[in-house]
Amino acid sequence: MHISSLLTLALTLATTVCGYVVNEGTTCEIYPEALTHNAKAVDDSPSIRQAFDLCGINGTVIFTNNTFSINSALNTTNLLNCDVSLRGQLKFSTNVPYWRSHGFSVIYQNQTTAWLFGGTNVTLRGEEGGWINGNGQTWYTENRNASNQPGRPITLTFYNSTNLWVDGLTIIQPQFWATFVWQSTNVSITNLFVNATSDDEWGTMNTDGYDSWRSSNLLVENATITNGDDCVAAKGNTTNLLARNITCNRSTGVTIGSIGQYPDWPDYVQNVTFDNVRLFNSEDGAYIKTWPGVSVDEDGNGDTGGGGGGLVKNVTFSNFELTNVGLPIQISQCIYTTAVGICNTSRLQVEDVSFVNFTGTSTFNVAASLYCSPEVPCPGIKFDNVSLQSVNRTLGLPLWNTTLQDEVYQCAHIASQNASGIPCNYLAPDNYGQEVTQNVQ
Ligand SMILES: *[C@@H]1O[C@H](CO)[C@@H](O)[C@H](O)[C@H]1NC(C)=O
Ligand SMILES: *[C@@H]1O[C@H](CO)[C@@H](O)[C@H](O)[C@H]1NC(C)=O
Ligand SMILES: *[C@@H]1O[C@H](CO)[C@@H](O)[C@H](O)[C@H]1NC(C)=O
Ligand SMILES: *[C@@H]1O[C@H](CO)[C@@H](O)[C@H](O)[C@H]1NC(C)=O
Ligand SMILES: *[C@@H]1O[C@H](CO)[C@@H](O)[C@H](O)[C@H]1NC(C)=O
Ligand SMILES: *[C@@H]1O[C@H](CO)[C@@H](O)[C@H](O)[C@H]1NC(C)=O
Ligand SMILES: *[C@@H]1O[C@H](CO)[C@@H](O)[C@H](O)[C@H]1NC(C)=O
Ligand SMILES: *[C@@H]1O[C@H](CO)[C@@H](O)[C@H](O)[C@H]1NC(C)=O
Ligand SMILES: *[C@@H]1O[C@H](CO)[C@@H](O)[C@H](O)[C@H]1NC(C)=O
Ligand SMILES: *[C@@H]1O[C@H](CO)[C@@H](O)[C@H](O)[C@H]1NC(C)=O
Ligand SMILES: *[C@@H]1O[C@H](CO)[C@@H](O)[C@H](O)[C@H]1NC(C)=O
Ligand SMILES: *[C@@H]1O[C@H](CO)[C@@H](O)[C@H](O)[C@H]1NC(C)=O
Image (cartoon, rainbow, N blue to C red; front, side):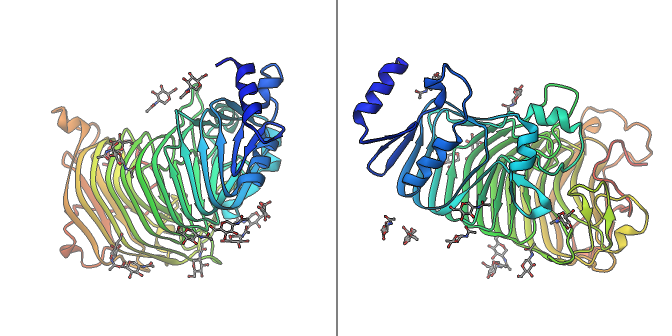
């Protein structure tokens, strides 16, 4: 339809016209400023705020099939009985100095978000090919592989929500983490698609697909995530999370953690299931990662911490298919440090964790490295039908630079190890980094 006839139609139907929000009854349709500003990327955030003010309670908000410029941070929280339909493209601006000083704090690791969204009885649906373009390449390039840069914004944070259903969301080139669920309960994210891919030499560090914190009763179903960090991660005080039918490309796996960063906030993560997960060309697979029991200062960003306590209990990783995964199964209690001895200090208890039905290939000769802190050896760790082979092995090739030609299962401080079903054949080292880059010797 021609733009002017579209507008004429919209104006004809409208009972109220406020800027570019067409409000009829309880429905607000948003049109971009570009339509009347010679296609210039004029900020659409004011119209978006207006639409949520008008229709965020007992209403419907529709982003029409157009390109919207998000040049300023959005806080659309405290919605009630609201259905949001995302058609067209939401395109975030790349004004790095602006975003670094205007994101909304999410408290955790002093991170910020570009869009704080939530409420009670809310749906957010990607429809008719609607998508979010984080325009993240600018961030990947300026970040130069550094970690957790403060002020680099999470694309979309679901905050303080009860009964939130997010369906069919597509996020391309997220600036930082794509989605974050914070202080919420009953949140379902279905049919999520995330793709963070850099087109230059700098990677997509910290482009997590889904992270949750201080939240419960969560579902993630049918997700395809391509990125450079955690695919789906349950952080502190995530309880009752079910993540199923998840495909992860190039990620650092599906994870519990990182946790144990803050002594003042013990992390409890219980009743978590990752089921039906496919991982391709990923650094890690099923991964539980805690900080050590003493404070370590990596680089002064969100990477300072350690010494936090808590509990990880009743976690199941089931039905995993791995293709070329660096560390298929890992428990580490000393991430972010490779100093000898530090791994022995964590007091964060990990227990009742099952790894069931794992098939596929590891990149190197390591299938699993399970290092529990001797302060809190891990009871109830179970392997059931875990069968992995190195990529070289499947090709009939010998493993380079090692005498360990069979798959290595490293264990340390597993309580009742003999009853665990883990074919432990080597001692897990206490100074593993976050990834393996070669066969272990
Ligand atoms: C929203 O709808 C509920 C009933 O579903 C009603 O009780 C409430 O007053 C409405 N709120 C507003 C602001 O219209
Ligand atoms: C976001 O908006 C709500 C009103 O809906 C307000 O109560 C809250 O303080 C705002 N949050 C921030 C971080 O500005
Ligand atoms: C946030 O930064 C401040 C100042 O650097 C620091 O004191 C505080 O511990 C940080 N908070 C978190 C949650 O990382
Ligand atoms: C949310 O939806 C449920 C089920 O439809 C309803 O019972 C409840 O009253 C709603 N909550 C609010 C605050 O309107
Ligand atoms: C949305 O707009 C795009 C670009 O104008 C167009 O290609 C597409 O067909 C539209 N989708 C629908 C469902 O109308
Ligand atoms: C969180 O949501 C509740 C309603 O569930 C509301 O009363 C409260 O003001 C919200 N808190 C913030 C900080 O927005
Ligand atoms: C992700 O984006 C890159 C770059 O645009 C593209 O080459 C790749 O095919 C995409 N991956 C998926 C799974 O769509
Ligand atoms: C997951 O995808 C399948 C196949 O497209 C579909 O049948 C199913 O309803 C989806 N699940 C959810 C929760 O949307
Ligand atoms: C799993 O999710 C993908 C989308 O990520 C979907 O295409 C596929 O049909 C789903 N499979 C099942 C069995 O639901
Ligand atoms: C988790 O919940 C417990 C209380 O159940 C609280 O003491 C702790 O500070 C919380 N941790 C976080 C990360 O919110
Ligand atoms: C874990 O699930 C069990 C069984 O549903 C439930 O009784 C328990 O309260 C849950 N734990 C937490 C911390 O929610
Ligand atoms: C463990 O968590 C699962 C959900 O992931 C729940 O169904 C089960 O009841 C829990 N078991 C216990 C002993 O809490």
